[in-house]
Amino acid sequence: MDSHSSEVAIDFSPRLKIYKDGRVHRLLGCDVVPPSHDPATNVESKDVVISKDDDVSARIFLPNLTDPNQTQKLPLLVYFHGGAFCIHTPYSPPFHNFLNSIVSKAHIVGVSVHYRRAPEHPVPIAHEDSWTSLKWVASHFNGNGPEDWLNRHADFKNVILAGDSAGANIAHHMAIRVGTLGLPGFNLQGIALVHPFFWGVERIGCEARTPEQHAMGDVVWRFVCPTSTGSDDPLVNPAKDPNLGKLACKRVLVCVAENDWLKDRGWYYKELLEKSEWQGVVDVIESKGEGHVFHLFNPDSDNAVTLLHRIASFINHS
Image 1: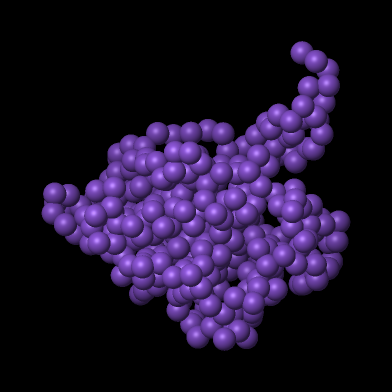
Image 2 (image 1 turned 90 degrees about the vertical axis):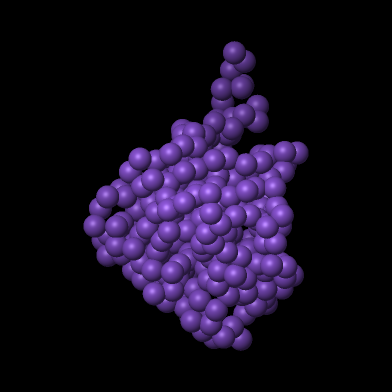
């Protein structure tokens, strides 16, 4: 092997490495589980292609139904996975398992979106792919879409968007697009943002006390979105987005974790929404003693179970 090809150009361990010959080596999020029947939750899943040319797809989840041959309309969750826009897919075990759990707990239909990832496909390609996916999902609202599970069982009058970390960023922007561009047949009730990846030039809260650690936020953003104007880009800083108040829903749940370096951004997002022209209700819940996306990698912990319950209650509006 050419020695030059094994030389690391960018090291984002433990996420990925990029070599000088252009190869991208992902260190996390490479494991894949197939769609299946999950015996623990009785949830069924299957994979669908949304755009073959752009490699956009999704995994659909259906809870245990009394009679699956009957038309039974259930709330619809569209989920965007995290991973710094770089790693993981809906087929990664933590996300597959989480969707099984939330679909069972809330008794809903779930669609987990597979968007193209940076650095091969820099942001905002992930957002464009996610919008393509939402339009594909919405094409089923009259029962004539290409996927039978959505035609038969999804209630398009009761749609929730959700995501974690980078995926929460995407869910936020999809709610703004629905509000500004519209999506026929798609009635967005709320968004659930778990440990959302928002950022900004001005340091807030704990960010000012650990400047070296929090400088990584700027580095990561520049890496995944090299054409960005910087950390005050509206794609990553809601405070700079003139369309913030145009969220299409009236309910927002923000989940933060006490030891997460992004925690203060979640609380700040609540402040921004309440100061905007948006007329909805936003709640924040904080998991004490926990770090970023802890619930995905320690799903049986008491705090993870509590978080799952709160998200399910939010979806069911109870």
